Image 1 (spheres, helix red, strand yellow):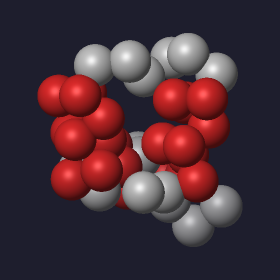
Image 2: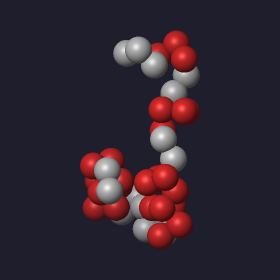
Image 3: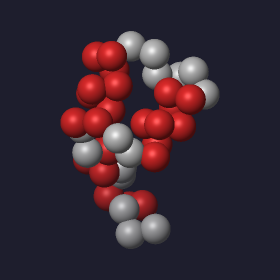
Image 4: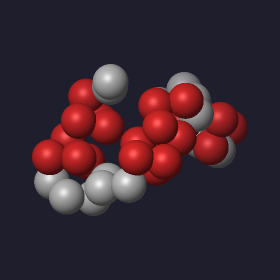
Length: 39
């Protein structure tokens, strides 16, 4: 599990197993706008 997912679980933002699985499967870089990808 990624550090992000662990932190979201620890802080109570991710509680549902389906959401946790989705966060682990989806590459979030796909949701970053092209103009800020290189930042």
